Length: 242
Length: 132
Image (cartoon, rainbow over all chains, first blue to last red):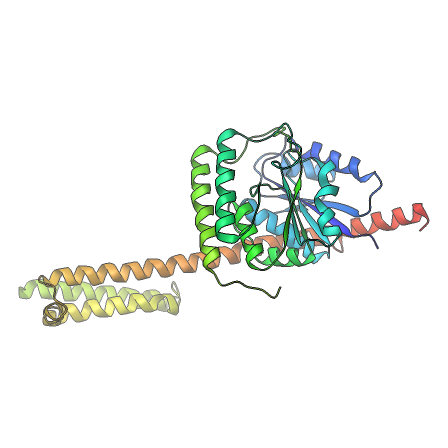
């Protein structure tokens, strides 16, 4: 029995790219694989035509009644994955930044049962064209350091949204997922709970369309809030026994 | 303190106490959230009726101006209130988020029948094609 993999595609105002992303996935599905692949778009209260496009083109999507933010939207995906009994759930961006070709390498550690959670990093292995902006990279380096010091999690790309979870991690994340800027914090949470996390080199593309939802001011708030959350989490007693 | 001032304060405190009670009775506020308000209202009435209590308490605690003690206690009460409100809001926010998520999943299941029926259909089609 082939393992069932679900792509969780959170979408907030991604009318420019959502159709292209779904076509890419469908094309990839045609190829020979060792796993069964499904995807679900999470419409996070989009104000543009994202929902209409999904409806018109018959794309599988969950319609949130109002905007929950990336944390709430992704968690909905994990809840859906758990409800439907998927073996692996993969977060996949709806803006075209993630390349489906790297899906298989990303879930390899999970398929081989080497770890519970796998993160695709832009900063190890072959360096792709898209390495994010300079200031973002500095911020990411700082976050990596903080994560390492306080949570003993060695990640080169903790903000990467291209990540995969196995059944146990899905169960945990469906119940506990940070509401805003969740990527680094969720790694600290997983580590605290005793999940093994691995990193896989991937190459990402620049945003194909639309606008990033994180401005400069928000970036500073992001850094402060996430760092604080990581430090707080590190003070919590280690919870084992998943 | 002048008698007039005391009477004014007492009337105000009693009015506040009355308003809090009415709000609870009209079911505009649940009992558990109103407990702190009731306590504040009650203390206001007591202090207005017996200002000597405040004087005595402030000299006991070591505060020179009794009014400062009043302000300090008032601020403390408001801080506690705000903190509890933040906790309540956080919890409700989590509940609302969960409801939204479940609603979205239910709507999908209602529309498409059994969850992941599409996945099951694809799988069985593929299996048939491959003759496995």
